Length: 177
Length: 190
Image (tube, rainbow over all chains, first blue to last red; front, side, top):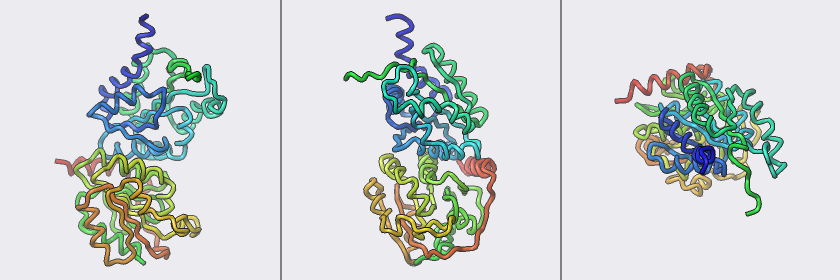
């Protein structure tokens, strides 16, 4: 196995290690193929309350409540989920709740399903309009640095930070199964 | 039917360490009318988010009781969160829906509860450990006991009269509300 492939397989573990480093205690998510490994790691982690949501919007409230209670929280979602959160994001901005969102991108590289494209193509600009700092990760080797940096900015500055994990990083969705 | 101010007053009397999240509109004014308190997190927006804020808080503070006081319209907008809370089973979270069957803030248009949607049945179906419908002030003592000493998650649908009470407006600066809440919480932790 080449080094690149090895790192590519382990980027969710890298993110989980960053969660542990900065002491993230609550993780909200809607089940997602791109995030499946990271979700598994969070569910198994006794230090993390994993909260499976019916819609990503619920996660925004979760982050606010966690912060009020003295815990750090992160959200995992697909790019389509960003659209489900728009009004609720105002809670984070109004109150200065730190928030780290990890977004697996759809509707870009090698997307088979055109229905993913409209939201995927406006995900980053929507996040910016909502007051998020956004960082895009294309290479597995950049995950550690970008997610670590994003955590530090969010939690040391009460900022809203989104890390966009590109579709090329995650890999093509297999449609032939 | 309940008078909303009298009912909320009864619930919050002697509140001690109770953490309170109030849904936007009248529930926020009702909570403020009982006297401002740093452990109140007043919402002025984020409609549909009150119950989930309660969940995040309840998970972070398992030794404290958490009360979400909200309206029927706000609760309806976040109906899915009842399923999320139900499977997480926070034993310290109580949601009280002040149900006037109308959207008070926008001109008293009827809500889904007016047409018979039963939030207690929804909560039970979502695996809440207890659900209760109350409409008389005589039940306030029992509800207060659930808030302070019950398990959770519990949902109470409280049928209030649809009179509009005088507005009591608490602070609106979200950062200030957050900061005084977190400061008050850390100063009361052992």
